[in-house]
Image (tube, rainbow, N blue to C red; front, side, top):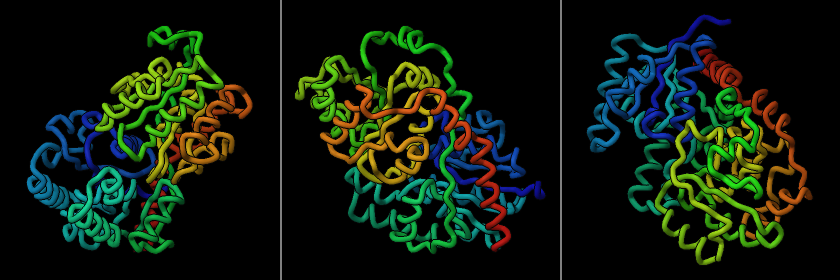
Length: 384
C-alpha cells in the first residue's frame, strides 16, 4: 500500500443527526477510508455530540440550526484551526455551501470534489429559484472549478458536472455509492420480518423509502398503483419517509380509491430499514429527476430484495449490470404500473435473493468503494 495520506473531509451534517444520502456516504467514508491508508479529519454542521459519535474523527463547526452567516463563519474559522494543527495532504468537499468558506485557506493543497448532486437544480425542482437559485449555482461553480479531481456517483452525474458547471471530463472519476452490506444482510425469513412489522402475510408487498418531495416521483407511483391493482388486486405498497408532500400524497391515495393498497408509513428509523427491505417482495425507486445513484437501490439488493427503478439519471447504471429487467421501460404512471404488475406476476423476471446480495457485496461494499476513493485521492495528489 502507498504511504498514508491525511485528508480533511468537509461534509454537510452528521448522519446520526440528519439522515440523508450525502450524510450516509460521508459517514461511511470516514469509517472506511483509514483501512485504505487515508487518515481522516472531518467537519460538519451539527451538535456538540458529533465528535463523540464519530470517535473523534469529525467535529462540528456550528450548530446545523444556526443562522447561515454563523455557519459559514464557523466553517472558515474551524478550517483554519484544522490547518494550524496539521496541513492536510488533500481536502475533500462533499457540500459546496460549507466548502466555499474554506476557499483560500488551503492554498497549495489538492482538492477533490465529491459531487453528490446539483444543489441549485435540486432546489429549483422543489420550488426554490430566483436569486436563491442563482446564488447556489454561482457558489457551486466556484467550488467545483477549484477541484483537482471530481468524484461522481454515475456517468449521468458526470455529464451534469461537465455540461452545467464546465468541469473538464478528464478531471472526473466515477465512483458509485456504498452500503454496509453486512448490516443489510437481514437473514430472517420474510414471514418473520412481516410478523415483526405487523404486515400481512398473504399479500404481495412493495416498499419505497424516499423523502416526500416532487423529484422522487411518488405521485406517479401512487397513480401507477391503480394500474397495478387491476392485475394484482391484493397488492400493498408501503411508502416510508417524510417531507412537504405528505398531505398531498395522502389525499391522492384517497382520491384514487387506493386506501387499501397504499400506506404512508412515515419516517422509518435507519436501524429498521433492513427488516422492511427483507419483508418486501420488491422495492421501487420511481424518481423523475436528478437521481445520481440512489443508495436505497443497493440497500434493497444487499437485503436480498430486487428493486425496480425508473430510467432516470444514474439509476440504470446502478442496477442494470445485475439485470436489465430491473429498469422500468419509462417514467409516467402507466409504464411504472405495467412494469410493476409484470414483475409481480412473473412476466418480468427478477433476480433471486442470492443474486441480489452477491451483486451488492461484490460491487458496493464499504471496502470496495473506499479503495476506489483512495485511489482518486492519490491521483489528485500526483496530478497537482
